[in-house]
Image (cartoon, rainbow, N blue to C red; front, top):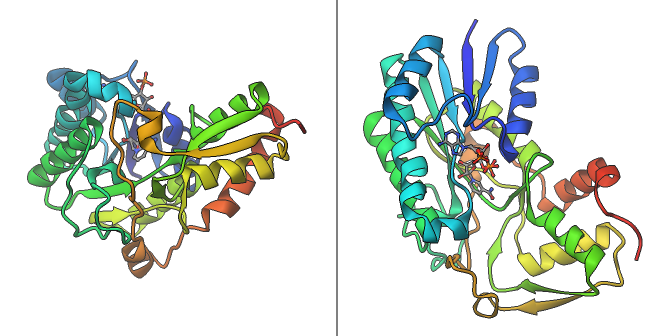
Length: 292
Ligand SMILES: NC(=O)c1ccc[n+]([C@@H]2O[C@H](COP(=O)([O-])OP(=O)(O)OC[C@H]3O[C@@H](n4cnc5c(N)ncnc54)[C@H](OP(=O)(O)O)[C@@H]3O)[C@@H](O)[C@H]2O)c1
């Protein structure tokens, strides 16, 4: 029997990952910790806590994920996303646990204009991307066989996300402005959680890109959310990132090439539009999806 520890278990991905692991590893012990159980910024207490449990696998999905907030809170971004990742990796080394670290498409600058391979050199544009890349570097330097999973544009039922934000705004306004010059692949946390579980079952090591298939801009994604929610009367206006003027610069293109996942596990995540349809129908009760 294995002990599998998820750190960041109460976050958006964490909720789905916990249920997937509980059903995929029925004979193992699954532990879900979050900030109230362990603060990965604190090296000594992270060691003590982890050593007490002696897990066989640690999945570190804890992070400071407020991309704009990271710009004005650089210290916190690096303390959690980079130093925190290092502390967890050192704790994993001490108990010889296998380590999984979640990273992001924002390690790339978007200049490639073709889907990014795992081997493409990172060049982050914002503090969040820098801090996550530093986290990748730390865990790779410390552990040769770590599994790093880069993903992007997450939404799911356990956290604040773009889909819910569009639905909320559409229930309040007649016109929405959405950015149309960033291209990526919206990814449903339920699908990502299954892929993480599969990669663990395959004992995968190294870097893997994991995202739902097909690409779009936030504008097209927004239109699809409204159409599927039958909010056809809300007008959507495409705007540029410059017009939106958010504190953190985002890559204009951050599509991830997920062929390595397919090659090594046979898995391809379904197109984002199918995943979105399922998410919206599953959560219709709890969201403001009324006709207008
Ligand atoms: N969201 C995306 O679009 C996206 C895209 C690419 C990659 N990722 C990566 O995927 C992973 C999961 O993302 P997510 O969206 O599920 O994140 P999330 O919802 O923000 O969840 C992260 C969890 O980590 C906790 N946490 C923060 N600081 C911590 C600390 N010092 N010690 C222990 N726990 C701490 C958070 O608690 P609080 O909420 O109390 O802070 C939260 O429960 C992250 O590694 C993220 O970088 C996310």
